[in-house]
Image (tube, rainbow, N blue to C red; front, side):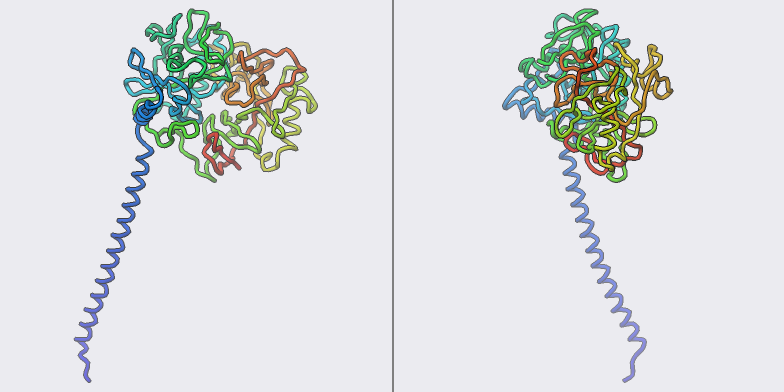
Amino acid sequence: MRIDKKGFAISTMLYGLIFVTIAIFYMIIALVSNRYEHNVSFVEDLRENLEVTGELQTSLNQKIEEKQASCTPTIRDTDGTVYFSGLESCVNFNYVWYSGKLWRIVAIYSDGTMKMVTNDVMTVLSGGTADYDKSSYIYKWLNNDFKDTLYNYDNLIVTNYSWNKTRSDSYTNVLPKTTMIDGTVGLLNAHEYYKAYQNSSYSSNYLRYESNNFWLMNGIDNNNMYFVNSSGTISTYPYYNYYGIRPAVVLRSHVYMNGGSGTYNDPYTIEGDIASPLYGESLLNERVSGEYVRFYDSIYRIVDVEPDGSVRMTGADMFRYNGSYLRKRFGTSFNFGSGGTETYWNYYLNNYWANSRLPSSYRNLLVTGPFYLGSASYDYRTTVCDLVEENTTIKYCIKNSKIISKRNYRVGFLRYGEMFAAQGENAYRGNFYLVTPRFLVTTSQGISMSSSLTSTYPAKIVIFIRNGAIIRSGSGTKNNPFNIA
């Protein structure tokens, strides 16, 4: 049989075209199906994100409405400000985690801004030679040392806020705006604290702090400032005394949250705060003051990052040995480093604990760092700086080596005026040493001057983690601290 080669070629081409067309058809179906599934997934992700993000104020308003069925969590002042007020069991949804610290929102203003205060005392200070003004040591610490620990504050915090420090012998009425002071960071005034317990009582309000007395911003005259004692009562005392500091800031309006439900264990987080680390890549020295880190058998908090990149950390609680608080003497003199046996803190920590007690994997993370040993009376800056003038800051003194006295150790104590040099969240309630000569942190007064070298007290230790330490896991919170290597 003779084959028509021309017809055969045409038929082959037609079958080929049909095959290619069918293949393209199925490819298009698969592509559309995949794109559809991708879009569905994208929409679901978007919907999920929208459920946890939104304006913080909107979420708070919803929580207020929900709470009103069982209690009264807020009170509106005569000037229109909405204050959170009442028992902790009622006002338990206003927690915010920002810049390594836990905060409580205390007031919502008509322009959408919100004032919040730290949940814990951050340090202990004396006002010095003046009540709260720009020459006060408290103002200088808040608007230099503490402000420097806040992440992205220019975009999240009102930096030119006018704080009301008007003196008054009554804190139940709205303060007239007679004496205002501008700054990024401040304190609550007596009226603002009073509003926190107007719906309950001073002894059971959500801002009561049992660990330390803490200062308020205003006073009754030019000698006496208001403070809150450990029972929650507002009292007055001369400004030169030593009490705890609970910094306050004002969030800008339209701050968005990106997670959390506002409770103690699940606080709100806000957009613009420091991002979560990349495990195995992010360095510990890229994080912020206040974040929690697990080291050996204890939890620590980041205090600061040194100029050489090492990370200064302090215990979140007192130093323990076999589960119990360890007590030792300060030294054979009031200078840290004296004492040549394990009876004394410096010798025990740097010669026994750091050399023998720690496993090598942790010991290899430790480096030596500076402990500033200057004496102090009221001005916290004299613990570091060799010459203190009106605008001198701790950061300037360290950066420019204008140091009065220091020694390098792997382990030591916090100094007067340093972050977390207070009772804070400690489970322990009692005196403990600072590295500043003669300074003891106490529960009632805040600071006491020690005159005994035979007394034994616990310690809240400071360690230095080497430059290059990597975050392996964790979120840096108290319930989920970073793990490092």
